[in-house]
Amino acid sequence: AAPIKAVNDVAGPINGIVGGDAGINVLDNDLLNGVKVVASEVKITSTPNGPLTVNTDGTVTVAENTKAGEYTVDYTICEVLNADNCSTATVTVTVVAAPIKAVNDVAGPINGIVGGDAGINVLDNDLLNGVKVTPSDVKITSTPNGPLTVNTDGTVTVAENTKAGEYTVDYTICEVLNADNCSTATVTVTVVAAPIKAVNDVAGPINGIVGGDAGINVLDNDLLNGVKVVASEVKITSTPNGPLTVNTDGTVTVAENTKAGEYTVDYTICEVLNADNCSTATVTVTVNAAPIKAVNDVAGPINGIVGGDAGINVLDNDLLNGVKVTPSDVKITSTPNGPLTVNTDGTVTVAENTKAGEYTVDYTICEVLNADNCSTATVTVTVVAAPIKAVNDVAGPINGIV
Image 1 (tube, rainbow, N blue to C red):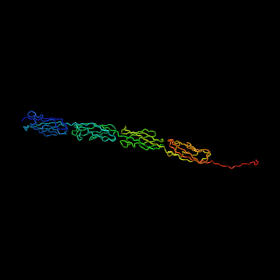
Image 2: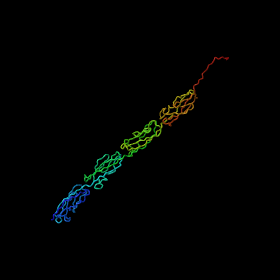
Image 3: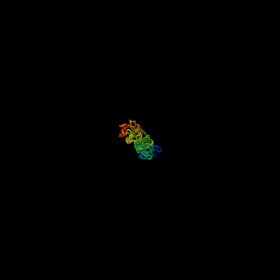
Image 4: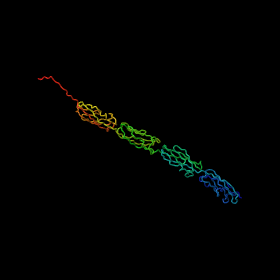
């Protein structure tokens, strides 16, 4: 028989995911009788080895999803004319991992108070062998950075109560088939402050003399992230305006001795987590005058000839805010009536030589703080005649002739 020679072959690199034809024919360098064999003159036999198969036509096939590496398979050619005239050679094929590409991701804006899912999956734009990766074909690894975590399923989580800002975290995808076939990318997430809303407040009426707490807390209707604010999550700032002060705990104080009227003061709440996340509102407080009451007075009996002080002060039983008035807190006005005069200090004077009888005079007290906060009462004075005494008289002796 003619000499026959199967010559070793080398093929590749071949993409392991795709596999398929290795791009060679083993017969291309094999010899029969010193020249290239004619395919019809030989018969090829081979037992597949691992992912490699030498086909009967001399082509070599690599199985799909073959791990990167170097693989071999033997084949034998036998002359058709002389079936026992054979030669064996080895095919060596280099298989390489498919290209893998982790692509950078951008997410947000995400509400920092809520945090949670960033709304993306990092695998959605990552590629394996030029097409979108199948999650089961890769493994994700990542070390959390600040508030960001890339989970093993590709989702991204933002920690609750994260300050507004831009955050990044890296992650790596590695092919399951080839654990060293990896690519790394960066996720950038924009976190924004939660919406904050200071809502206008109305309080009152508040007694102006007493002042003090206005009976509200400005935080009670203010909102952070759409719900009532927690006091510890905001900081209150305010500049007192007139008699009003908004305190750092949200209470509102009215100064003592405040004139009746409507007063306003602005305040601002800023999120503790994000100091520049602020909202301003206005507090309106109605202040009323304290109740005032002039009480009727009775005086006498007064000696009409003498007249003078009636022995009372009209303020002694008059009330301001439920207690005896302080003279400096009110102003007395009165028009004299007949013999009676109510003086500006509250004393009452009866004119001299006043005929006995009962006399009245009205007076009005008005609060100094609120000039239109007034009350009127009547003073009744009984005037009596001065005591009179006819005394017996004795005269004489008298000269009767004269």
